[in-house]
Image 1 (cartoon, each protein chain N blue to C red):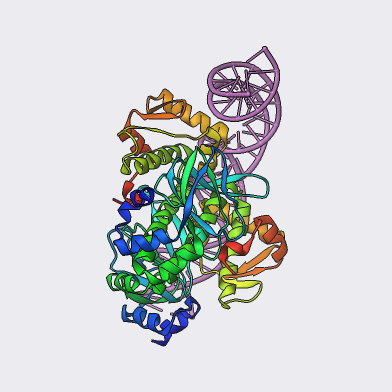
Image 2: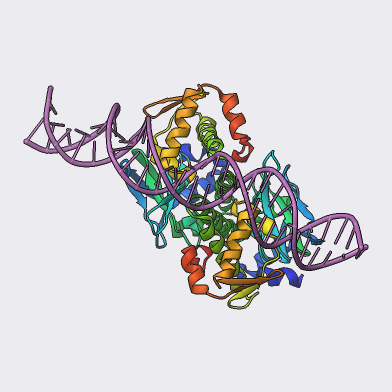
Length: 231
Length: 231
DNA sequence: CGAGTGTTTGAATCCCCTCAAAAGATGTGG
DNA sequence: CCACATCTTTTGAGGGGATTCAAACACTCG
């Protein structure tokens, strides 16, 4: 399972712990663009480590509105909360995606026996929680324009740290509706904010490719401080 | 350390693991109302398990605005993120408070050796993350009035599960400014929403004591589903 | 009884939403 | 390879929820 070893390289596990983790792998699964990877109910028996593509975690309200609560990038575990007692999140592939699938029960047993494995997952959850906490601040305190800028900075930085993109450009496989659902704003207003940023020469995007023309200015607008993303 | 054993009763640890945890305790600390328990910078060497009082986690923006990202109640660890590589949160006592203080480094070592201890903390982080994820949904999707109702339901439910309050009433040691900073709204509007709820006979509050007069209706407004809080 | 903190009210403004619909892009089948 | 259906982006107009500014009103406490 070379895929696995590559994906968890920066977890810094001993071979013993890597082995224990590998034992809990059920297999690899491929998803189509738009495919639901996990319904948002019940106690899911699996966990998904994304190795290719993008996915989103989201929650739905009764009126059908959707809040995206996280973007899952290659190397992320998309449904960490399935480890715990309760998971109320949906998981959906934004692009064709591939994930390594773990058995939840086996993983929990492995963690009980291998402390280092548990602390590795603990670290993952803490990272995801750090991002989430920043989302709360952005949603609560910032103007929409600042929030848009912040999310662009965040996504670029997360991709960049994994060496997946250029210094000032990246593929963003989202519709503006997806983007709006992450930012808690209407698609119409999202569109207007993005257009204004283009007209100001801050960014460009053709198709789903984003160029950040003025990285410094974008960071200023967002008050972006990457430290919450680690390293 | 009877305080400790009482506080972690529902972590369901073996005596061995309890012991390992107890070894990492530095002591007990008391805080005054309004006292800062943790600055929001640097790598804090301690963790705080609250055993009495209320506290808040928060983040500040450069312009001085504050977002509360969690309420810490007795039994909660207020600064779980200090376990990880990066912590950017402040922690502040809302009331006179008492906390059991752990040594971070010792705790990490203990977790590596005692998987069950690590998974217990993992569970704590997952719970806190579940609350946070719901906050994101509330901030992103809901009207302020619904959000106010939701936060009232959440706080009551969290206190109620620990047997700390009556079925439809509880002490809420917050100013309306605190409340507003948690909800991402202005104090003025917070005040107006609360007033309207009083006039409608939904709730009462005198001083810092809240009565929920119409639990069902409040839950309806909030679309409150307690499952994200566990049990 | 002033000082300080917290709550309440009023007025004006604006950011952002909703509704409605056109224009552009994408994809599928015949 | 084009026609049609579908998805996505864009534009316009109007309204409302929430903000900001300003100030009066309560409550607590030394």
